[in-house]
Image (cartoon, rainbow, N blue to C red; front, side, top):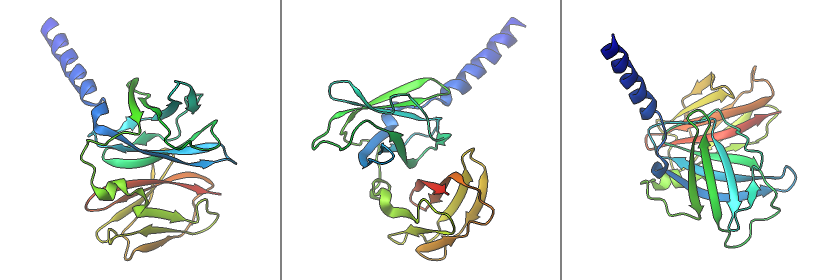
Length: 213
């Protein structure tokens, strides 16, 4: 019996370990887009790991170590999936981003209680392709939207792409195969709130946040 218990513990430990994130496989691509009305800024992070980040919490400090974004350590996504680039929009005390801004970005997995720290700006060493760095390869408009909205995929990446609309819990609402660079999505029964638009192309995957008013 003792051997069986130890064997099961080893299996469980192995599974848990395999699901934790590896900080070296992430890269902070940019800190920008301050919204002085909503008091938010965007932190774009690439996850080159094979594991997702659960309830990702992003915090930014300046060169003095003072927290300038997400002081209350809130999470705004249920997950950042593996091999995706995601824009984290978080509250900030900054009105502008100073020229030559330097600081530290902290990314925490709330399930496994693992925090990665990244000096910003940073040089990416995780083998990100140009298509993944160019986060504007997929854009949504209008966003926020009160009716139908459009998804634009540039550089011919729409060919063989798949667009998935998910609600904030990760439930799949709709899946579309684009027929051109611009795809119109009809709101239908989508209620007001936050949604995720995941665009998977033959080369990479993009995640955009959509607001339905």
